[in-house]
Image 1 (cartoon, one colour):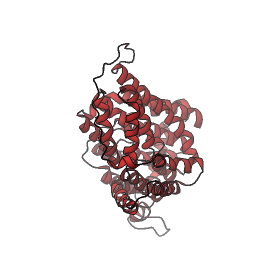
Image 2 (cartoon, one colour):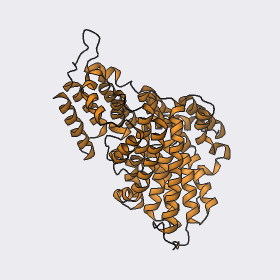
Image 3 (cartoon, one colour):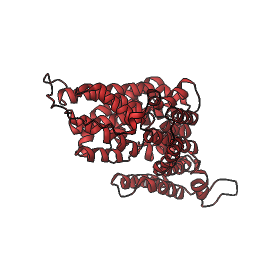
Image 4 (cartoon, one colour):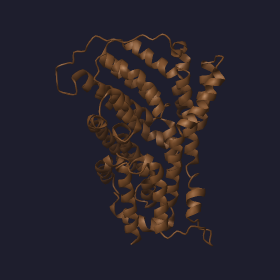
Length: 432
């Protein structure tokens, strides 16, 4: 009976999120509370020291992913600093100048450079800032608005694979190390990097028809030259800021927050001027403000993790879940390949929703290794990052390009689903 109630709660709240009747900000804490309640967990702590609902949700839950929250905050501060100093805009305009009026070269160049920028940048604000610059440039040389928007989203998600702020969730929730995550993120990132370039080539060069020999005829470009920008004062050394965290963490093996702090100091030095401290102060306040929604969402994920990993809950879920989980590499690939679309619409494989909670429950069964679960969530998560019509950055991109979010979904889903399957195949070979 308890197991049935837990399934009903999960399905009901998933549907509410899917239909946008209930935001994930409220849905996750609500799911955690209801699951704890029907599992018989009391409100207050037990006499033997077992935590009650109040302790699980409001004492231990909010700090369950505290490290991930701090990584997110420092990453957001760096992202805002890169924006406020004009570095991101300078890099984009430099690429535009070098690519000139060649749409295919421009599309590939932007995809590569934006992927690099999004290894550090993140959030809707960064997407709006960058998109406002690159989308008009791409469409002005003849790239279709829908294709331009998809290139931006492909770059956002490809760079996000290497974004250290995103790794914090896996480190905290699954007990993994940077080295372990890196060992899978690199091949997955390579897959989506290749797919992104392939997407640009097929859609920009051949109008979306890969076997067509006819090339697109582009109009004469009309790129406005704006010299009145702070980005014109950015030097080459400052443009290297986005890759500093990767060098520090992956190359020198320091922790992620130290990598972000080092990049912030490097950015201060290479962009030093009379407004340096004012820019940094603004970046700190803007960064914390911009990440507030994600922080609250992570707190909700932490609450759900504490509840679903509690033995009094897993005893009702674990045995049933263990029966359907794959135990071989082939079964793992087929299982998650078929279920990959569940990462869309705030579904159960969405890391920024139910994904980590489901992953923790699967991990508790002992049937699937933590690395395999991380790989499954990271691979299928690319569908959410690029295609999901409920993403705020997808909605903004569709509006900015005059297209529909569902057209973006249809255009990008074949590429991302294929990429996710390739990632699952690699994971199936490595971790089983």
